[in-house]
Amino acid sequence: MTDCYDALETRDPAVREADLMAALPRQIAHAQQHTRAFANLLQGVNASTVTSRQALAALPVTRKHELLARQQAHRADDVFGGFSALSFGKAMPRVFASPGTIYEPEGTRSDYWRVARALYAAGFRAGELVHNCFSYHFTPAGSIMESGAHALGCSVFPAGTGQTEQQLSALAELRPAGYCGTPSFLKILVDKATETGVALPSLTKALVSGEAFPPSLRDWLSEHGIAAYQCYATADIGLIAYETASREGMVLDEGVIVEIVRPGTGDPVAEGEVGELVVTTLNPDYPLIRFGTGDLTALLPGVCPTGRTNQRIKGWMGRADQTTKVRGMFVHPGQVDQVVKRFAQIHKARLVVSGEMAQDEMKLMVETSDSGSDWLTDVAQAVRDITKLRADIVTVPPGSLPNDGKVIEDARSYK
Image 1 (cartoon, rainbow, N blue to C red):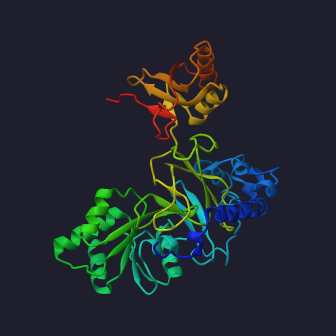
Image 2: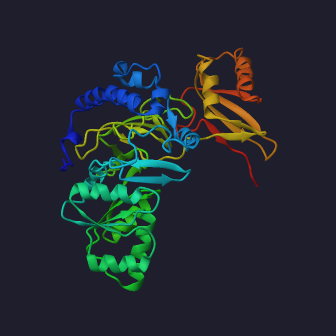
């Protein structure tokens, strides 16, 4: 077992689950009482009864595009769309903007986005200097890492993005212990240092995020003396999961409740099945309940070899929004789910769109144990009723469809 950031990471899983389920109804009640959005979205919900994952799964999912739409509709009276429990002033020292534009509040609590845990797992320790190359402009990425580093007891050089030569000069003269930023920019810095003969002996570790971090780049950085780990965080939620020395998936943060649901729905999938990551945060300042990130992932079985006992996810596996335009009509994953729920014979389904451009064809692949065919005509009619489009229905044995989170597959040729 490696040492951990705190005792929360090594709790008995049953104790952790009990703690989370005890905090859940309090957070829901808080969101209902202190945010206009959840007073509306959770109207009629008795918070005291939401004490299990089954009860949580009955609540609506709020996806990023819905949060944006609510913010846009209320720009004149509340730029946060009623989701923030804070108001401008001392309780909200900064406001950030993410593409869309979605505005996010920052509260005053130490380590507001809870990233110190990920930094610790990546090897950062109190008394070190962190070279932070995440942007400090508009988006909260720079502040996310800086607040975590300060909570850990580190000093921070707010390098931001760009200015490669000045960055190298600061790295050589300040001799930071580690880097925070995107993995691609770290590679640019190391390449430039090699090209110009600048030695960076102090730079031995990194916490990267914001983009894909393939094993090939991880190994390349290791060959250059840098042990880089990744974390998964968003401007809305903060830290969701982080990599450890085991390199086996990403361990969930202690301050979130995570579900994996079938894209286009709020229905949890079986452990190991790929689906959309839905997060409930215990942050009282921005209490998002069942927030759909739009990212695909899957839960891993077992626990981390480092001794951390929380659940693990595989990491980012693509986007969950598979909305596709077919013959001028938008088809959504939720519509496929509506079809599936009308027929007990269907275990799982996948809509495949094929053909040349402007000659679209739809095929609904359905996993079923039913050897009959009389009900397939009803399935075809249901597809037409729900999507206003025709589709061929093809049955396949249970377990035949790929476990990749896709509900709609666009297999058209665009040549």
